Length: 389
Ligand SMILES: [Zn+2]
Image (tube, rainbow, N blue to C red; front, side, top):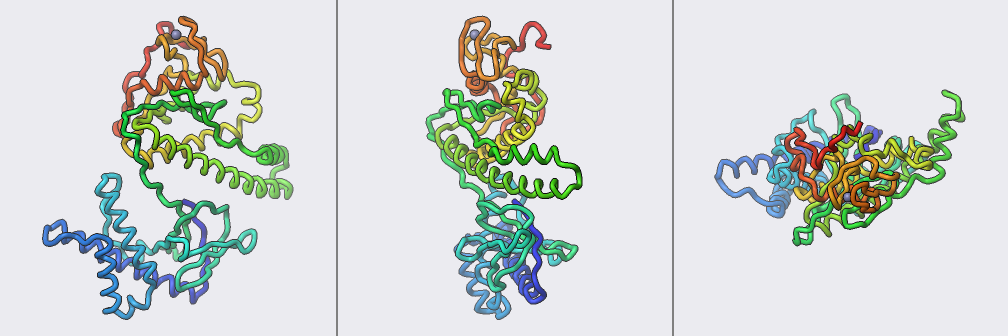
């Protein structure tokens, strides 16, 4: 979700306010119907039925008819979506929207809207019945499937572009379990031996990053480099988003249970994993930019995975997953020969270090089921007899 400041003209603003009022009216109508249902008077109408009622209401009220059907129907669709989330237990129950508090409306569907860039700092978004409205183009827009216009209490208008929530993906139904480890040398390692590489930052981004760190603070050179870097990073980020979408869909489809590290724990145990202690030469060189990017890429991937496979993603304590031999269970930091390779000091089992960790993750027990309790259970794997430190 990325938000931009919208700068409508006076005339445009008047229509936008009407759109807000319409959307709120329709939304509240749906809330009211839902409340009848809960008191058991009559079944709450579904979205199709509500649309029919909307058509009736439009023929009855001139002011409603004057508004945009697209926006009014979207409000109903949003309500139906909010109810679905409420029923699934992931969100609170949709409630009344108050004038002056929740002013806004949403537009989705490509034929109804469009966005274009006018200059470096100005963009335009097409809004039903309003036409092109300008906004401050503060960063790149990509993959937007809908937008929401809001008016805050300070009287400022914003437009927020949203990526359409991914539909959930069905697993194969075979009970297949996979463990996934994130690595520095390999972005994703699967317990079945597969590895996947997220797109690396472009060389141009690295060059600009270097130039920026050398340029004097406050200099115009630095300013220019900053803008250029921001643009390149935005493009890189689009490529990684695309990668995360594809990878998460593929994995959600092929496996029923997907085990990943619990990130909150992972940050604390990073040094135990040995990835920081023994970075390869190249890794250290581009560490700053690369590491933060890889981390954000992993975060995005994990989030999308949970969106697409709700209830099928289990989080595992990452403690000792990279030091433990997935063949014999022996735990020894020295088994991790390098960034990339694992060689058990007890049984001489050898494997890609990230894949070995992924196998341990696959065998792990959930630390938190669906992000439930925050307490950590004992580490999944046996602790080494001698202290690792
Ligand atoms: Zn072993």
